Image (cartoon, rainbow, N blue to C red):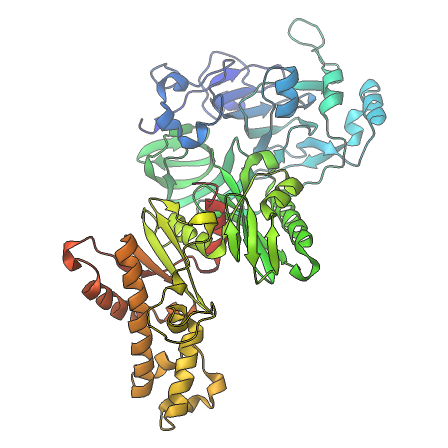
Length: 617
């Protein structure tokens, strides 16, 4: 499909006005337009195209995107709502209740205030915790609104309304509503209003009493930004972003999701096609760059998947909510407290996950699970930490423990492997099916991705690329053997060799730093152009690192070898000579596929993104 304009189904509910028809250009023979269903596959009002066909019968699964494939039906519905009168006070059930009792899905929604008359507002949630008896009595006594929060609203405000939250739109609001694809509503109170036939409209009090959340409602705006704009609401059914255009802006429609773009203010063009206030356009998944020109505010709805990524360190646990495109929506950290035992660490992880979900308005049904990068020897299949020196753990089933505490599925892997996966999925090796990453730090860690998947070995204990011997009976390695790559290519080894050179050559200019205790991994690089001893250290370091890279390149023949760690701050000073040595010594030389050496890009985010990516394999 191309980008297409949408022609909505209009509804003439008795509380509606005429703004959508007269000001927002809705084409209908109805006098009142309470709602226009801008994007709908629902049987009660399917969206159509200019030629009269419905979008549902026109759009293919490819046009909708991969993220829609797991739903039994199209996941969302987008409306414009004009409230000339108060809407009923109502509540929507959760999926679990609705599926069991109504053979339907429930309804979570969000409201973006397009415009509001002076004093206009919404009722949303209870002012305080109430009992079932208080709730029922208020309904009987026509005093329900006295228990509810009334928020006076203005254009640009946004409210996310989870299922079970009692609510009502009051007079004078014009709203863009994005919701689950459901028309299931339990009406609790309707001001004694009568329908077109003079009968009071049906209430669903008994059902509402069973599904309403009776705890105090706390309004917390997201205040989260992405490159596209301000995030307004997140759920597994819809992700909504406010996109402000003042001149030119581009958004990208990836193959995972379509985009529904509704103009709520101003005018302009979308890929050269005119768009005015009130218009909605469908952008198919995989369309690519969409050029927006003009001065306008757009509400963009799409379907994204969300994951929790956890990077477990010895001092801190870092966590974040990550979407399927590798955007870190929100992140945080908490102390590890491994000295207080493994169960305490698991509880700290669970509490961090809970806080991340609460901050982003997501619940456990909205995320695909938790991916974790853990230091040590990891059995990723069983979710077991076989041994971790950093955490002082042995045979701790952290996956099972965290899963029980959170109610989410959990996948774990070694932290170095996870960092490599992050770079392969979202970083410097994005788009490569085969890559190897060397992490040059206190030791030499790494990870291998083969055919798009982590290569971990038996019980995930493989990929220890720092422990291949490159010098027979060489320097002592921390693993117990001698001559390992780690003993020559780690930052620790570089510092050791720099100190040795200084101590052996008192005329070295490196002594300008003061004494050997001030040596860092960059000292020899800083002086290599002015001190021959520093150059010898650098040349030796690069030569031996190249041995290891060439060995790995000959075994796995990846598209790219990535280098991470503090030593990589040297950039081309490190990469160019390494590339020359690799090109010279790699098996078959120019006859075989070439292997590019690059610096990793994600830095401290690699572990978190790679952990989330464990659930995307």
